[in-house]
Amino acid sequence: MMTTFAANYRSYVRNASSSETHFGFDLSSVAKAEPYLAALYKHWWKVCFQGAERLPKEGGPALIVGNSGGAVPWPALMLMYALMSSKANARRINLLMNLSWIEDQRLYSALTDIGFVPWSFDNAKSLFEAGELVAIFPEGAAGHTKPFSERYRLREFDWTQFMPAIELNVPIYSLATLGSDESIPILSNLEELAKLLGLPAYPVTPFFPWLPFPSNLISLPVPWTMHLLKPIPYQAGTNRDSLEDIACSYARFIEGEIQAELNRLLRGRTKIRK
Image 1 (cartoon, one colour):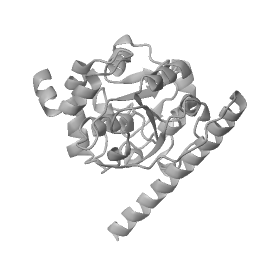
Image 2 (image 1 turned 180 degrees about the vertical axis):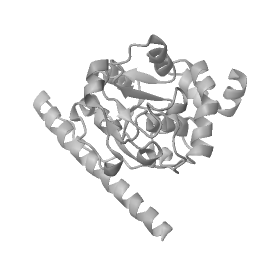
Image 3 (image 1 turned 45 degrees about the vertical axis):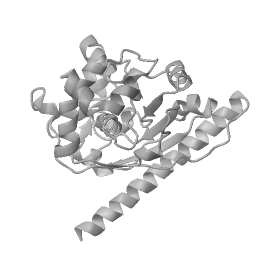
Image 4 (image 1 turned 90 degrees about the horizontal axis):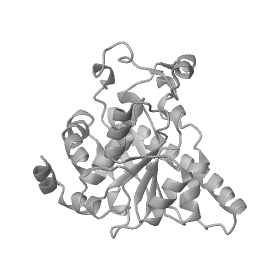
């Protein structure tokens, strides 16, 4: 399996193998997950990804900021596969997310093996200092549990997640994903039950919790569009207060940019249907 994977993803394997910071990353685990990710990306959701060529081609740190969508972090996984299979700029990506709620060590290891990294300021900073590509989804749990009636209406971004990039003057790219909110529609979020179980959220979908695992992870075959936009320059601050001001204002700006792109994509889709 690993030989075939290395042959099919030469640029990605070369890039991933040269990485110095791992946080549990295991290339063989990515090879095992690749057939499932490829099937979802190419055949089930038929993802159209644009903008990989905008990322630094000679390596170097960068931050991708995207909207969440769905109870499972599928946008993060589809982003991972899009960059892994990119002909223009294949790069390994580190997916920074809150993993503290996961008590099952097998699930935790499965996620970190393929590139998820526990969110912390220090982890983010060390990745940037090592020249790594990082992605965050700063809507948090609120983004994963928004009801279907409010699909593609972004929740407020957590500006503190921008601080490590702002402090190190790392280029920031907006990623707008259309399709994720519809492929796994959220009917409601049982907040009280989530608190009882110690979970960040307990979303109810047409499949979960009614069907047994893994069939409760079934999604609808809605086509996805993922647009990686150009980075917007910003002026790095010189002290803690100015850094916080810049991070806060830039988070609002990125949130607005992604919302505007989602609105544009929705209008375009409506015109095609007509």
